[in-house]
Amino acid sequence: MAEKQVMVVGIDESDHSFYALEWTLDHFFKAGSGSNFKLVVVHARNTPTSVLGFTGPGTNEVIPLVEADLKKAAEQVVKRTKELCSSKSVGDVAVEVTEGDARNVMCDAVDKHHAAILVLGSHGYGAFKRAVLGSVSDYCAHHAHSSVMIVKKPKMKN
Image 1 (cartoon, rainbow, N blue to C red):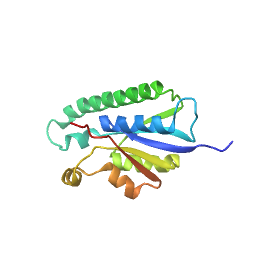
Image 2 (cartoon, rainbow, N blue to C red):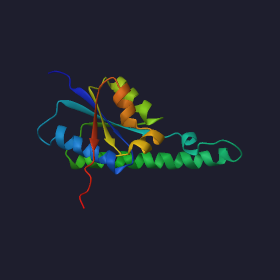
Image 3 (tube, rainbow, N blue to C red):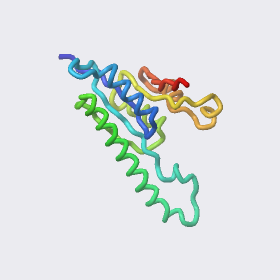
Image 4 (cartoon, rainbow, N blue to C red):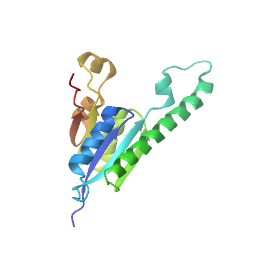
């Protein structure tokens, strides 16, 4: 039997991200039908210093608090991911948390797992916000050594 290709799904705390994961599960991992892919879900956890963005007096006291919050948030992402996969009857999933900038973490995960495809959710930022904040999906589309699929959450109709 041929070895399955790897699909990496990048995830954060956002609803857009979980929509992309759910969409992927529904379209590539339907219960009972099997899949051509091995699923690896990767969460990029920020570093305390990237969240704080400053150093100076009092930083050493704040860092452990920020670290604890980031760890708790990552645990929630992992829990929610496993619950969603379980609800879709997808049990063979690896969930990883890696500390670092999401753009680099996702591209590194593609290389590490020799992934055939990287799936990311789109936050739906406009051009200005994307230019100011940067876009993980845009960066990965240009730098990942795999195909990149960007899943957009449909806009709600009024």
